[in-house]
Length: 195
Image (cartoon, rainbow, N blue to C red; front, top):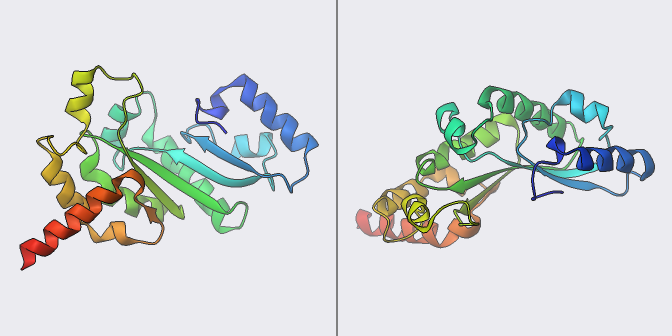
């Protein structure tokens, strides 16, 4: 849960979580999808999530505070990092099996893709997932075209390919998702330039 908004910002989902942890055995485990801002130690304890969580996916979309303030308006990068460190320590201690940080690639953040993989490792995540930008009605068509660096016709697309050739993206914990075809293209391009 959820993918349809942050579960920790919803009274309905908070009520569900509290009921779930109070009435279900620890054999039934949750996968939580959140922006990570409200999932801190106090929330973990208040909802008694101990033994009820299998994995946590956190949508971050940036490796630097300045970029985060633009792509995740209203979020506080310092608070997010604190929560990520807490969750990374919990994962290392065996409280749950997977902490995955997600990153939707767009014009505003694509240069941070390699440093995001490093950030995830630093905070204790054992998964990174990259996705290309999709327009779910958030952008006008013109805005989407401006932000969609995965489009081969975008002026920044060649630079994106250079970024995707970075060795930090070859880690086993990095899932390239819908960027996989572009990574192959980037590596082919890099290999040709070395010949």
